[in-house]
Image 1 (tube, rainbow, N blue to C red):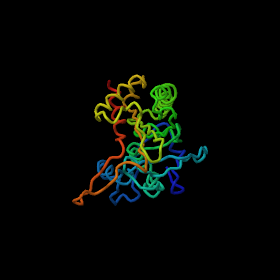
Image 2: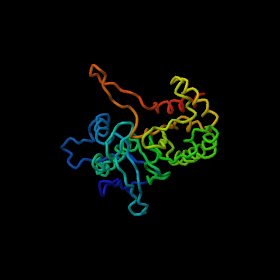
Image 3: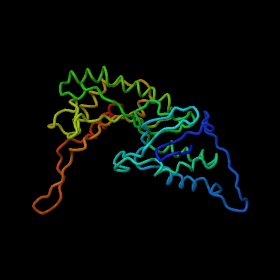
Image 4: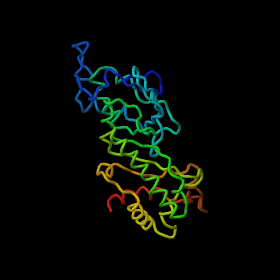
Length: 280
C-alpha cells in the first residue's frame, strides 16, 4: 500500500492477493541490528503508536482503476476522539511504511485495518480482497426514513418496520459478506434537527425514569427488529448522532460554581435500549 497524496490510500495490486502473506525480510547490512529483529511484541507497540488513529478513518471515495486501485480517506472525529476538523490520512498514518518490505506490509496491515475504525457510506469501499478479512470495526452511514422521526407511533412503526429496519439488515448482510470478521458494525442515525437531538417517540415521556424509558424502547424494538444471524446480533449497533447546536449548557450558581443543565435527553439511552433488546 503506497500513498500518492495526503488523502489517498493506494492498494498495491501486486500485494492484493486473496491472502495476506507474511514473508520474512532480510537485512541489507548483516552487521547491523535491524528493527525487524526486535521481539514481535515491541514491533507491535511501534506499529500501534504509528498506525492507530484517534477517531475514525472516513472513506469518502474510491478509484476503481484496475492498474492503481485506491480509496480517498480522511481522519474524522469519532466517539469524542480525533480531530475537530477532518485531517488528511497521510498527515497521521505513515502510509509509506507499509510499502517498505513484505514483512512490514503484513505486520502493519494487521494494525491499520484491524485496529482502526472505518467510516463510510459505501457497501464496497474499495478495499482489496487481501485486507477485507482484517477489518474489525466499521461505522456505516445510512439515511433514515422520515416517518421514524414522527411523534405518531403508527407512523413510526410503519416507517421502522417497512423501510428503516429492512434497509439496515440489507446493508448489514452486504457489509458482513465483504468483511466477514467484523466485530462491530455501527449505524449512526442523524437527528432530524440541527438544534435538538432526536428523541424517538417509543422512548416514552420525560416523566418516566431513564431505566423505564430504556426498558420500554427495548421491548418496542424487540418486535420491530428481527435479527436472524447470530453474527449480526453480536456485531450490530445503532446509535443516535446528537445535534450539534443543542445539549448541555453551562451556567453558574450564586457561589460561582459551574453547573451543567440538561436541556435535552441523553441519546445514549437509545443505544443502550438497542443492546438490551438483543438479549431479550
